[in-house]
Image (cartoon, rainbow, N blue to C red; front, side, top):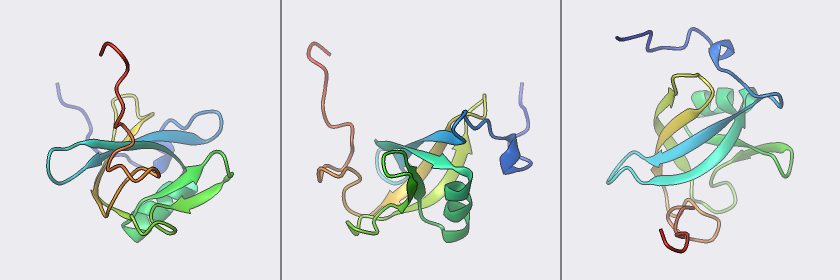
Length: 115
């Protein structure tokens, strides 16, 4: 069964009680590695769509942040998708430098013991 593959508007997304949606960020080139998980509010998503680069909502600072403004490690999106429940975004990006603030390419560089 195939359903509608486009969002009629940003209002069709299911924002949480804080007005946020999680964003799984994946490398658009290479092996498709998951680079990070971040959060967006509507304003961040509108800026992302308009600017062609990833803009997130910082839950700790309570403000928008453009990935790479301080580090130089910007993310330019190639594709933005949403899941079947319309409550999670997938951003395929071209990553400049490291995605993680530690300097690692991906934030998911550690394994749990026994895994």
